[in-house]
Length: 124
Image 1 (tube, rainbow, N blue to C red):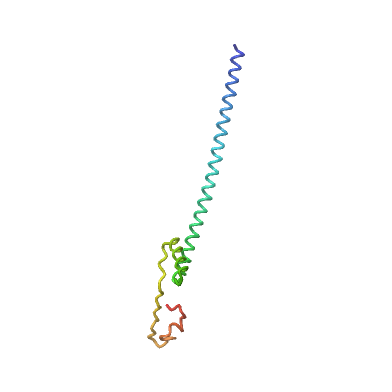
Image 2: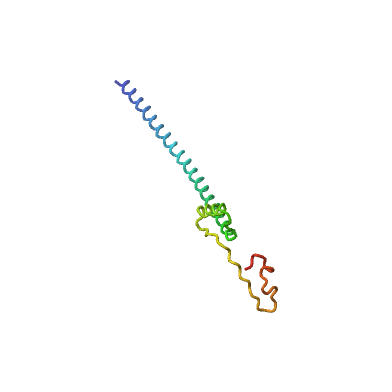
């Protein structure tokens, strides 16, 4: 009877040891995948942030040159439609208003009434 009790105790100890090791192994893999998912989430967040920064930079550049866009052909109109769909903050391009020539009132005026000659096409 004592031998049987010793065998049962040994089997129980082995079973408990195996269960304990399995639980440790499961916790190890749970922590491993948690770290992997955290790394993936950080990388994804950085990529999305970089993409957002790139989009903002492109939109800023488009807004800078948008006043120079003129729609002449249907292809130009299609390109403008695509850009406006991608960047809704862009306004419809229309005829550019002529800049007003600053009137010189003082005697030190360099070019009174000659804005295009003095300023080029970019008169203030």
